[in-house]
Image (cartoon, rainbow, N blue to C red; front, side, top):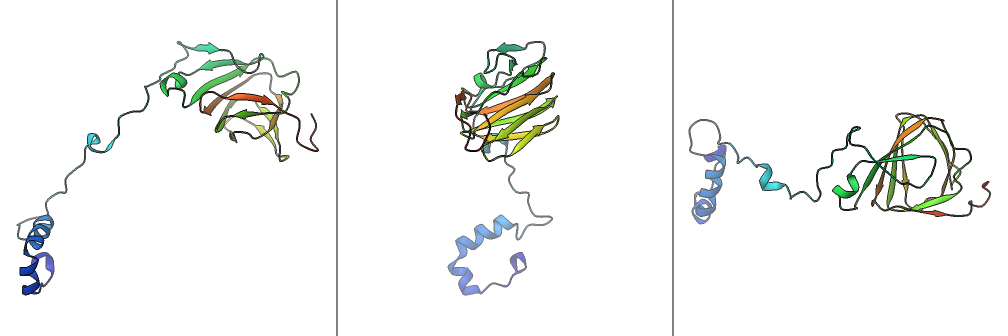
Length: 179
């Protein structure tokens, strides 16, 4: 009784080559525990990297121009490492916004924001109002109209966009919303 099953002898003769392979694979007829299955190494299953490693530190900080003059933008090297598929930057300010940014949307797939210090107030085209506080995150789909209406005097946030190039388009406020 290989593998604990009773086989029909005629069927087994007909299927002998298949049976032998099955029995060998399950370890029938061998003494001791079942043989170990083949272990897969990383090289067997992982595709080659599609980008480069990016490691940014405070000591090698690279600041770039951004959308707003009152913010500082620290590039984290992700745009180069992903060949433009994604951008990551730390946005900071030491002086709050004097006035709202105005209604706008971004031409991108996604914009992700993670608040690290301070706060940002936003209002969205559907009327949703959000105060983003430290530890909060926000994913804004590309094309969603919004207005940043206020910030703390000091703030720091992580912003990620897909793709890296994200255009800002100024637009009219949605119907019934203040400018």
